Length: 544
Image: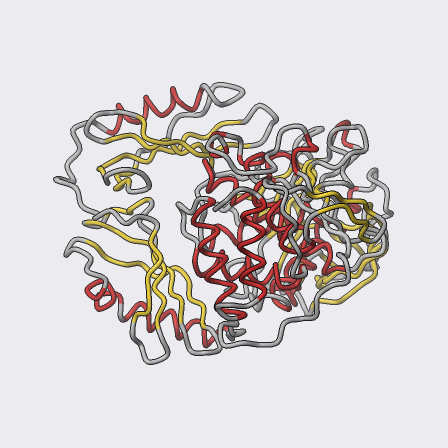
């Protein structure tokens, strides 16, 4: 039956438990030192586009693709594919494109065109400055050879023998070095912790050499387990209610019932009162996940002016009770969904608020900069989810789970009561980086993300020892300099603008510094205290 209008109901239990975990590193935040006032609107502030206005801008960009490609000096074989568009108050439009060559996807060929109000191109942010062309689009290596090689590569990274590789897709690889004809082969399997895997293996189509590999899966009235009594958006269906939030793009939360596949079954309730706050009630984890999704939606809409993960007003979905004693949570682009395990012994669901926000933010990154989940861009991808996981936690102002600069402090993933990660001094987790150095890109993204997390903390709160809302922090700098924070509200705005307008799939830490300086300049002016704060915070983490 078609759902009616979504109702807000009070739910008992802990709000969305911590989900993101190792594979999707979450960030929590406690109210910072007196929060900075909301910045006044400036010319560089992104407008809140209605669905119809955004669709119109996308149509206009699509109609002008050939003209734009010509203006950028692209070759006759290259075509632009419109992905996203953002418009600022001063009329500047930032249009994000993917690229094709002779009809083949160009991996690492994405770019953002920044256009002035009058239509003139002001500048372009490119993932690669290399000329995109290949001598021939006819491969010397057969697809079957590439598939077999990819399956062998994936088998080394997965817990068990992976399923058969999917048919390789011919692409142009431009993410590193000189662009070459390549195969992109996806191999499905399972990671060692039980997380599903869709490993992409990029193979040179002429030599058979492996060029790159990355995993598509990024590991981040009711009673919730972690957030107390919370309000939920539900829908009347038949004689009862379901966890379908019509007011937030139709976001649904379903029950996998310990399965590891499928969409899950709808949760239903006769009186619209959900959960008990205890993990032995299957509804409780659903309350936490549904609440976390709602707070994340509201944060992006009310703070950043973005309606939904893709900016198109459509809700994602959440699946709880994945597998058996699965100690993780993950975002999956293919189902546009977040998935949560129930933790060790099925007693600690990973549905905490900062985890939910962390996971959904992986979706925002995918829909915008699409930072490759490897190397320094992988660390920036994870760091972005930590940054916005923390931001949502502060935004929610939930007394049971107040904002802080700790990551996954509610889910007790290590079994010792300690947070998963720390933003003020990331190395306190024993593996993350406080400062950038040449080895940063070789780390797992959950640890190379420490540089981004530390930058965000310094930019928000500054260096040195302090106590914020009962939590003690002590943030060092690489050169011993003192950094003065500009306030978390401004730091969030700067990171979001940098992510959505100036970062691309290949952005590394040096390029992230440039992107955030540009964003701060757009928002606050060239010689503003905010720009100086961004520069000082990056210097504080040794990114110059």
